[in-house]
Length: 103
Image (cartoon, rainbow, N blue to C red; front, top):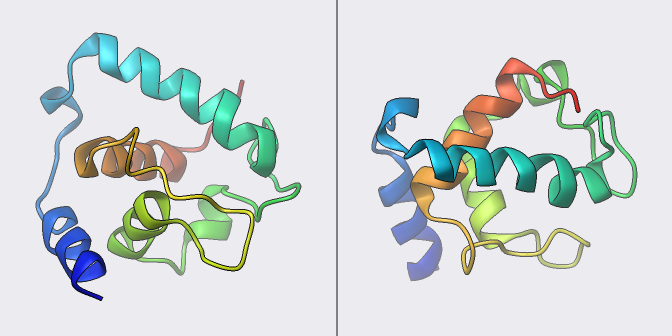
């Protein structure tokens, strides 16, 4: 519970795309397509995981999505990515998913 509270507190801070180095943005884009796409589909329309299209995410808050990326979803195939992603990285991914992702 403390871990979730810490994640939510950290993710409440706004992060602009320009705050992430261009090399990191390229790595995150690749991760989004290859790693997220392996479960959520290359077009993020769903597969093993739920769709991650802008319409599918419309009812989810950014903070909830960031917490899911970092902490995973226990009891599902969604693993925690906090070992590989910072809260800023996860927020960038949420922003990118809200724009729509195509390979």
